[in-house]
Amino acid sequence: MPDRKPHLLILGGTAEAAALARRCADAYGAALDVTTSLAGATEAPPHPPGRLRIGGFGGVEGLRRYLAGEAVDAVIDATHPFARRMQANAASACALAGVPRCRLLRPPWPRRPDDRWIEVDDLDAAAAALAGLGPRVFLALGLRDLAAFAALADRWFLVRAVSAPDAPPPLADWRVIQARGPFRLADERRLLVENRIDAVVSRQSGGEGARAKIDAARELGLPVVMIRRPAPPVPPLVASVDAALEWLGGVLSQGLAPARRAGAV
Image: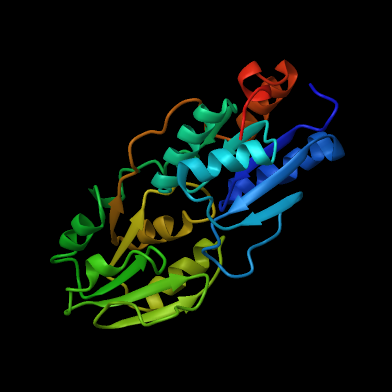
């Protein structure tokens, strides 16, 4: 490796990204510069160890310039499983810059025999799948992806978000609650019962922090409209923080690739 410390960029916003930053601090200490980048979609995000960067990069070219300008030696994309654009931009920018990259993608939730899932491909299909499932729906989607449900005037929607909405959601009848996960099973069960929820809409996000609502729906016998994940990302792909650390160790042990050392801004 060169005399300067290697620089890892973590594309974050997930529990796995935060855990990875902590594990890197434990494993490498001051010998590794770590920057975690967040999109800035939530207020007052937790500050992981190392440097914190908030905001977009400006597409593939903007990220490529950032990688060169900040002398980034490796990228671990630990964004949300549904962050399609960011994962595509990361793969393209790293390929152009000659920077090693891997995708940390947590496994999806396994479907159990007693789950009442209706699996769909997108938000429009999720809205259509609510026909006949009852009038009270928990939209476990945050605030940004609700327009597909705007035409359902005969439904009452419960929406949960980390931050308060800047404007009313585009729904006929709704309630917004503010909360930040992880969520406990008992609390999710209580939420569904007290709000008399008939159906849940969720992305197939996977992970422990958000699965309690799926477990609660199963216990209560409620249907879950489950939005499938997008197509698998470009390899390499790892499924755990441990595996991401192992990948990083391999990259650091090999030193910088010639393409990266010679990369121009």
